[in-house]
Picture 1 (cartoon, one colour):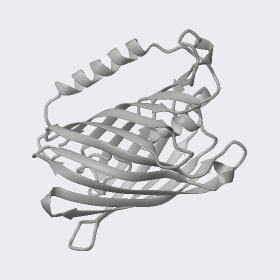
Picture 2: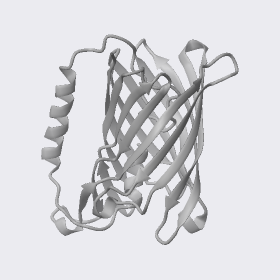
Picture 3: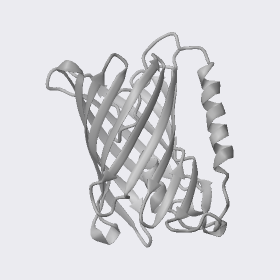
Length: 280
């Protein structure tokens, strides 16, 4: 969901009128195409979505995983639609390569009339390349841990193109508790670009999840994808709530929404997602 929130920060620039109906048909067709692919022979999917705190697990060696979604941000200044997408490849045991992007973005100023096409922004989001290393399993008080290193690149178009490369480093810890309860936390830092200068910002998230039946999981979390001084927009904080469900061992659907926890946060964030694992 953070890709949608990032799109909100850059919503200005070139104008183009999108067609939501065409994009919805494309997304539906894509999901149906994935559905008919044969199920992977090994492994159960473990996703980084829909919560902000990343999973401490990597995809299996030589496996591919797609996590994609449709997201919407409602803010007092602008509405943003995006298609956050993450592709993961386990190129070594406990080590995966990652490509992350908001993909297609569309923004419209709040209060603009439906026919005011000149007010719309439509384009491609930036791409972030990275790696995740699963460093340890959960043993007692020792959490399951992972380190994530990413670099967001200015590959987007128009309003959704960032300024220069923005590296980030995050550390994740997860604990499995009795009765299907899990807790996790993530801390990190990102070198961001503002309207006039570059700056370092903090990252923090804490999540509590609980198993529902045998295939479901509900969660609640506090997410701070950007902790910065007032001169850089202040802290972006959100209360996140959501649910995921395994359709089968290698396929998951999910839905989540976010409410503002700080003044800099948007009024509402909502997303629905689909994930698929291809294991060797």
